[in-house]
Length: 81
Image (cartoon, rainbow, N blue to C red; front, side, top):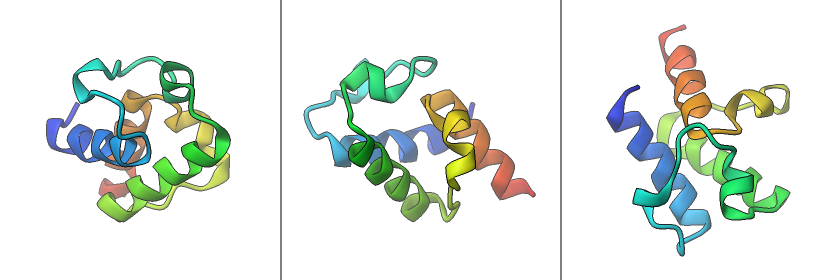
C-alpha cells in the first residue's frame, strides 16, 4: 500500500471528522463503522479523496472504497489506468 496515498486519504477522512486520530484508523474496517459516519459524511470524505487525488469515485464503486485499504487500491488502480 502506498503510504503517501494512504496519508492523502486519511487526511480527507480527518477533514470530515476532525476528532479522528489518524493513528487510530484501521485500514481494513469500514470507515463508516469505525467512526460512526453518516452517509453525508461518507460522501464528503469521498469528495475530499477526489480533491486530493484527482480520482472521482462513482456511486457504483462505494462498496470498493468503504475501507481505507479499498480506497487506496481503487485510487491507485484508477491513476494507473
